[in-house]
Image (cartoon, rainbow, N blue to C red):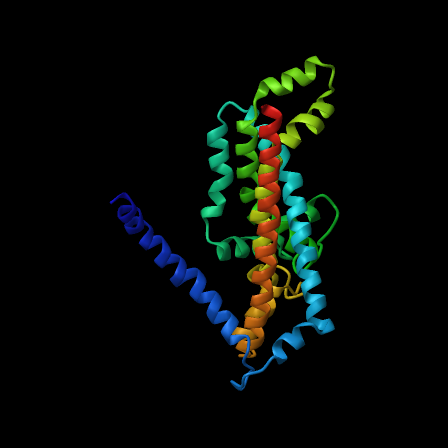
Length: 275
């Protein structure tokens, strides 16, 4: 009886997985074997390994790495300071709140801020630097991307810091560790699971950015997400777009497996030390 009840409650979940996870992936793989004229072919996969697409793949991983790295550099100190503030939950809510705003609206807001006659150039002109070309640059693309993804990096790190036993830090300081030494040997290793979760939450969607590359970078930055959008909506080559999506899915799964297994090993090591 208990088994039947459990299976009954699992049915909606399994149906959701089949319809919205497995079925779309199967369709993407299916379309990847057809060319623009609808003929069955392996040519899309051969084309993916040409220098043009390999360079695009490396570029996507490079920009995703930069976005993740800068997000981590900003998020970790911010999360650490949040744990020390009085109204930490309120400040955390204010940081998460922008993520509830539509991505397109935020992108258009930065078009106004970074434009030739925008607020940032107005400030630069006022202090004597003069008008600068900020939009359609690598800087604007990375800055806006970091702004969009920063809440997803702060939240898991904040949770890890909140779960950290403060007596361990006090013990390290009592044993003569400097503030930097306590951070390097105690705080950061024990919050590494949160760092890995945040990096996963930022790196994977950063691989497939396409709207920001068009609006903020002016298509100067070409990523796998941009290529998929172009093939599906512009060139109508669904087969090549699906092929790129297949490799993007494979890359995401590999990243999730690597970070997931490393988090499990880290938790096992921490449990052994605690015992």
